[in-house]
Amino acid sequence: MQARRLTVLVALSWQLAAACAATPVCQLKMAAESWPPYLSRNAGAEPTGLDWELAQAIFREAGCTLQLLPELPSVRRQREFQQGRLDLQLAASDTAERRRYARFSIAYRHETVAIFSMEQQQHRYRHVDSLDAVARQQLPLLAPKIGWYGRAYARLQPALAASGRLSTFLNYQQGLRMLDAGRAGLIMGDTLALRDAARAQGVALAPLSFTVLRAPVHLMLNRASTTPAELDAINAAIMPLEQQGVLTQIRARYGA
Image (spheres, rainbow, N blue to C red):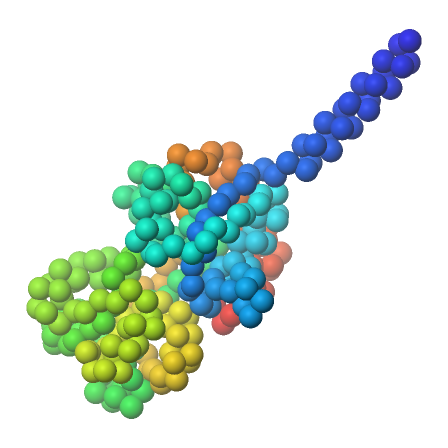
């Protein structure tokens, strides 16, 4: 009788272990967005891109799953996240304001923000060596409407807007059309994303001689819908993937 009970207990233990192994450490949901080369859909409507590949590698290592919900406009996506209906956003800057409603992983890549002119007009801007010079010389500038682009831009943005020489756009396709139409001679944005959009639209850009921002970006988890333990599991996955060169190889394929 004791032997039979022992057999039953062992069987139950194996079943429990199998169930635990099959249960993800975390199950996160995020809204899709069209932001090549970081996140988009390929010809087969499957998600692809630099950040998608990095996130997939990290979540596999952490034992987490990621549910991709339908795409939302950027303003609504941010609102849904703040209200706790989305668990995750990619490529987020860690700011004190966001820490009120979010928690951040360690960095999984860096972003670079630069200012570009049309290639045929680059000679006009060879003397422009800083964002302060753009403001001081009152050069018309196109910039994204939403996002964090560093302390220098945050400091100068009110004066640029007050001067009437700052125009904003919601996506790089729109910004490049504004540049091509002569709304301004300069456009600011994420280096990889802006170059990718310019190639797609056949616009030849040339970067100015300085970088507006180079900073780490993080996975941003909703503070209300995720736990510190889930964040710990994600951080514990990023570190060995960096040490093994897995994330470096993914970034290199995209020129990051």
